[in-house]
Amino acid sequence: MKRRKFLKNASLTGVGLAVGTAVTSCNEQVEDKSIASKENPESKAVLPVVVATWHVIDATAKAMEVIESGGSALDAVELGCKIEEANEKGQSVGKGGLPDREGNVTLDACIMDKNGNCGAVLYLKDIKHAVSVARKVMEDTPHVMLAGEGAKQFALESGFEAEDLLTEASKKAWEKWKVESKYKPIINIENHDTIGMLAVDKNGDVSGACTTSGLAYKMNGRVGDSPIIGSGLFVDNEVGGAVATGLGEEVVKTVGSFLIVELMRQGKSPQEACEEAIGRIVNKPGKDYKDFQVGYIAVNKKGETGCYSIHQWFSMTKFQDGVNEQIQSHFFNKS
Image 1: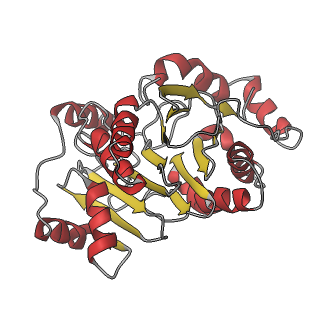
Image 2 (image 1 turned 90 degrees about the vertical axis):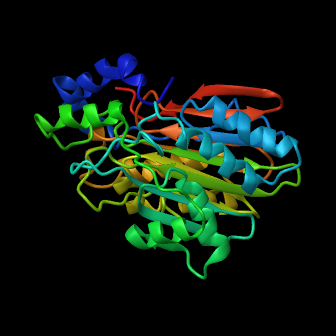
């Protein structure tokens, strides 16, 4: 199911969470509902493997093409993410991304390689392929993060071309939003989604990337979890990798992707680790998780995969053993 199209299938779920007895039962069930430790039936261990958040089969196909042609996992995740960055209809990544409340399309991205090197750009304007700029930061500078005008200047000096990222469709959506200017994440209206991608190549090396235009109609200057190493993305070549999507503020508070990788280091499967990370969010005292979505995907060195989310309708795309498919995620909130 496409990231934004899944509203159609899940809107009733969002309404049900917001009114009536569901609100009461939500709070009553938090302490009783345990997150089961179970293997993901889709986690067949075969290398190479590419996984990504949401339904992005063209992106995973590109990444696997790179690997099968002899490319590295790092090349695969960069070129795979670029497919979605160039997809103007996506409205969440790259050109066509939904703007902030001032009408600015600002991009966040990061990338991490097998050696633990990483690069990120934050609040980048007018440059479509933020993930490639992030790789340049990693490879060509002594820094990990560049932000705002400095990130744009670096991109232009590195040969990237500036262009207007606000498409007519996204501009119309923003103008419609301004009529009421409501500023609150709504379950299953994903105005804060991302493409995160992980790959394990034929050598067993792991890399990952994450790119987004962030929370739609956010405050000017807001940065979420996606470009923050350890929150939106983390890779350890001895263990595996993890990536997040959803409301970034909640991912940052638990350093979710780093947590998942460390749990896998301790022996948990990718599925168990994703479930534990969601548990760290929903079981926080006073946390009203019914109002936001977070989803994680993970892969380990053996090629086992996992995905889990707070609410229904999150999905993972996986290309493994010749099959490129969308997998609906298991989820925590069954009410």
